[in-house]
Length: 259
Image (cartoon, rainbow, N blue to C red; front, top):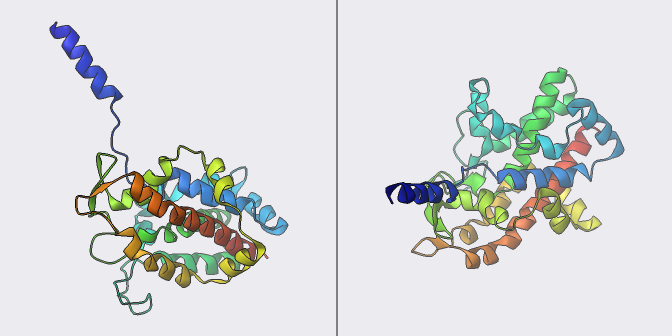
């Protein structure tokens, strides 16, 4: 009987879902952004991307910047995933972030890539950084208010699992749809020509202020912190919108770099 009880307990432990690690837009979100951009590159940009990345696509390198976080050689880029703009401030009036922030990093990387004098290794590194960061800046909680580490300190339950608000936006809502990144891209990637033109005309700082503008919607969490179907229903259109915008804009930036 004791052996049977122990076996049942072990079976329960090994089959129970464990909380997901917090991973910036999640694998599916980032790859969707990259996949959308892959399909919108100009012929010239496509040629250069293949030269720089070899057989890898923008979708495939989109999570590289998260993969390297355990490598001390890239510790300098840790603060590049986000920026802080307190309520009532703009990017220009907000305190400067030590080590650089996501807006500063994107502007720096684009300038370096346009200059065209990087080594092959540094060009590949910068392009991989760019793919990831354009995705990150479109996740509303990567433009933090300076009070809760971009929602990481806002404890909630997602369908009964303890987590935080940042994690819900990074991946849990997307993962709940049980789609591959190509399926998700097919779902959201239907911009009109006018929309593409408008989206690609916006600046990096515009993207950050857009993310900030959704703060009241993102933080509309019930007092008990229990999130599920209703919260996803109320916010998933925004998730889709930001993923699409990120993909379209990423393509626009890369086309501009390699024009």
